[in-house]
Image (cartoon, rainbow, N blue to C red; front, side, top):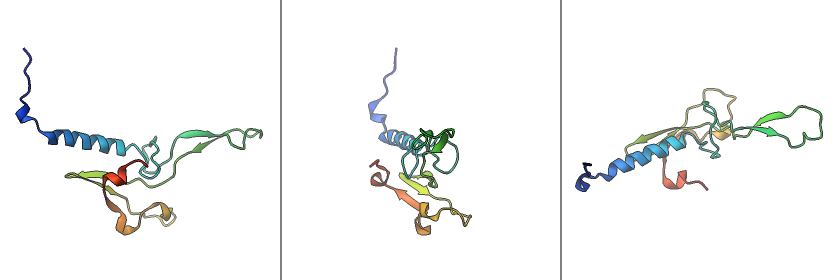
Length: 119
Protein backbone atom coordinates (compact mmCIF):
# COMPACT_ATOMS: atom_id res chain seq x y z
CA UNK A 1 0.00 0.00 0.00
CA UNK A 2 1.31 3.46 -0.95
CA UNK A 3 1.26 6.16 1.69
CA UNK A 4 -0.23 9.48 0.62
CA UNK A 5 1.52 12.53 2.11
CA UNK A 6 -0.53 14.68 4.44
CA UNK A 7 -1.46 17.89 2.61
CA UNK A 8 -1.61 19.83 5.87
CA UNK A 9 2.13 19.34 6.37
CA UNK A 10 2.98 20.60 2.86
CA UNK A 11 5.39 23.51 3.10
CA UNK A 12 5.68 25.93 0.18
CA UNK A 13 9.02 27.23 1.47
CA UNK A 14 10.70 23.94 0.47
CA UNK A 15 9.55 24.51 -3.09
CA UNK A 16 10.82 28.11 -3.06
CA UNK A 17 14.23 27.06 -1.75
CA UNK A 18 14.51 24.40 -4.45
CA UNK A 19 13.54 26.94 -7.11
CA UNK A 20 16.06 29.48 -5.78
CA UNK A 21 18.86 26.89 -5.83
CA UNK A 22 17.95 25.94 -9.41
CA UNK A 23 18.01 29.59 -10.51
CA UNK A 24 21.37 30.04 -8.75
CA UNK A 25 22.85 27.03 -10.56
CA UNK A 26 21.65 28.35 -13.92
CA UNK A 27 22.95 31.86 -13.23
CA UNK A 28 26.41 30.48 -12.47
CA UNK A 29 26.48 28.86 -15.95
CA UNK A 30 25.55 32.00 -17.91
CA UNK A 31 27.55 35.22 -18.46
CA UNK A 32 26.13 37.95 -16.23
CA UNK A 33 26.84 40.63 -18.87
CA UNK A 34 26.03 39.12 -22.29
CA UNK A 35 23.99 35.99 -21.32
CA UNK A 36 26.22 33.56 -23.23
CA UNK A 37 26.80 30.11 -21.80
CA UNK A 38 30.13 29.89 -19.98
CA UNK A 39 32.04 27.00 -21.52
CA UNK A 40 35.20 27.33 -19.44
CA UNK A 41 35.79 27.17 -15.71
CA UNK A 42 37.56 30.56 -15.81
CA UNK A 43 36.30 33.76 -14.24
CA UNK A 44 35.89 35.67 -17.52
CA UNK A 45 33.35 35.22 -20.27
CA UNK A 46 35.16 33.62 -23.19
CA UNK A 47 32.19 32.45 -25.24
CA UNK A 48 32.41 29.48 -27.56
CA UNK A 49 35.01 28.35 -30.08
CA UNK A 50 33.43 29.73 -33.23
CA UNK A 51 35.32 29.88 -36.50
CA UNK A 52 35.94 33.42 -37.71
CA UNK A 53 35.35 33.06 -41.44
CA UNK A 54 34.36 36.62 -42.33
CA UNK A 55 36.94 38.15 -44.65
CA UNK A 56 39.06 35.00 -44.67
CA UNK A 57 37.24 33.02 -47.33
CA UNK A 58 39.27 34.40 -50.26
CA UNK A 59 42.62 34.45 -48.49
CA UNK A 60 44.93 31.46 -48.34
CA UNK A 61 45.64 31.91 -44.63
CA UNK A 62 44.33 29.15 -42.35
CA UNK A 63 41.07 29.84 -40.55
CA UNK A 64 41.51 31.14 -37.01
CA UNK A 65 39.28 30.44 -34.06
CA UNK A 66 37.61 33.43 -32.47
CA UNK A 67 36.36 33.66 -28.90
CA UNK A 68 32.83 35.01 -29.03
CA UNK A 69 32.45 36.21 -25.44
CA UNK A 70 32.40 39.73 -24.07
CA UNK A 71 35.34 39.23 -21.68
CA UNK A 72 33.47 40.63 -18.68
CA UNK A 73 34.43 39.69 -15.14
CA UNK A 74 31.86 37.32 -13.63
CA UNK A 75 30.44 37.94 -10.14
CA UNK A 76 30.25 35.42 -7.33
CA UNK A 77 26.51 34.83 -6.85
CA UNK A 78 25.30 33.76 -3.40
CA UNK A 79 21.98 33.42 -1.58
CA UNK A 80 21.43 35.22 1.73
CA UNK A 81 18.02 34.29 3.07
CA UNK A 82 15.69 35.08 0.19
CA UNK A 83 18.06 37.57 -1.48
CA UNK A 84 20.50 36.76 -4.28
CA UNK A 85 23.72 38.76 -4.09
CA UNK A 86 26.23 39.26 -6.92
CA UNK A 87 29.70 40.26 -5.69
CA UNK A 88 32.55 41.19 -8.03
CA UNK A 89 36.19 40.60 -7.13
CA UNK A 90 38.32 43.69 -6.64
CA UNK A 91 40.89 44.01 -9.39
CA UNK A 92 44.53 43.77 -8.29
CA UNK A 93 45.99 44.36 -11.73
CA UNK A 94 46.31 47.86 -13.16
CA UNK A 95 46.06 46.64 -16.75
CA UNK A 96 42.64 44.98 -16.30
CA UNK A 97 39.84 46.50 -18.33
CA UNK A 98 38.20 48.75 -15.75
CA UNK A 99 35.22 49.48 -18.04
CA UNK A 100 33.88 45.95 -17.57
CA UNK A 101 33.87 46.12 -13.76
CA UNK A 102 31.28 48.13 -11.84
CA UNK A 103 32.28 51.05 -9.64
CA UNK A 104 33.76 50.07 -6.23
CA UNK A 105 30.49 51.01 -4.50
CA UNK A 106 28.58 48.63 -6.78
CA UNK A 107 30.85 45.59 -6.37
CA UNK A 108 28.17 43.94 -4.21
CA UNK A 109 24.65 44.09 -5.65
CA UNK A 110 21.37 42.60 -4.47
CA UNK A 111 19.71 40.96 -7.47
CA UNK A 112 16.05 41.56 -8.22
CA UNK A 113 13.75 39.96 -10.75
CA UNK A 114 14.09 42.99 -13.04
CA UNK A 115 17.91 42.78 -12.97
CA UNK A 116 18.02 39.07 -13.76
CA UNK A 117 15.31 38.98 -16.44
CA UNK A 118 16.57 38.32 -19.96
CA UNK A 119 15.95 41.35 -22.24
